[in-house]
Image (cartoon, rainbow, N blue to C red):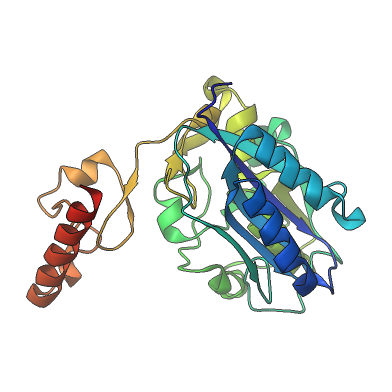
Length: 296
């Protein structure tokens, strides 16, 4: 592997960690000593993060994490980029490692049935299975699995309400859930089991593992997958996607969005054009000007 290639590692594990706050400073210091950047969340329910750096640095941090017996079997997924996708290293203490807002939902107590990427196509092709994308609306809009339902949530906190309003344990006997890396659908599966849904499945390793493992010619994935770093989106084989973020509203935009008369670089895109008052436009023009000056 070339020297300048950055390894991007995503990881999470639901595990009881009552001493999570004590881990913050040692973990931050160790990551910084290895030249690693990114964000790791710690909570009483576990750990969640995405980090990037050199091969040696990533390996060292993963070994450091796994030296805690509770994290000895911590799994991670990797992709590669020729840019460092993060500006700094952050370790944050949270109430939840993925925020649903229902502390009684605990994946450490129960979760649905894991389904490997190799078995996923057969599962979601079953007409008796309802397939649900547990990600937020802007993520779903740039790519999702064929025939998956979009809950149209703006945050994961809205997912329990979506379940209550749209799904029935007596009617929807088989439910398949998926998300970017596996963490949201794992928690969603715990929620649904607690509400009486009998057969709840979720994609092990999430979309990232599917795109890495399943050949494009066999894939039921359509579009690109949004990621929470400077790469914005990735494609099959975890290659860099074509989307970028609107400088004004932060919405992921494609080439077709740039072709719209509502798109003006640094100022607006089709997703925020209608909310742009003249005052906002002037403010955004100045902001874009300062950004360009900073780059030069």
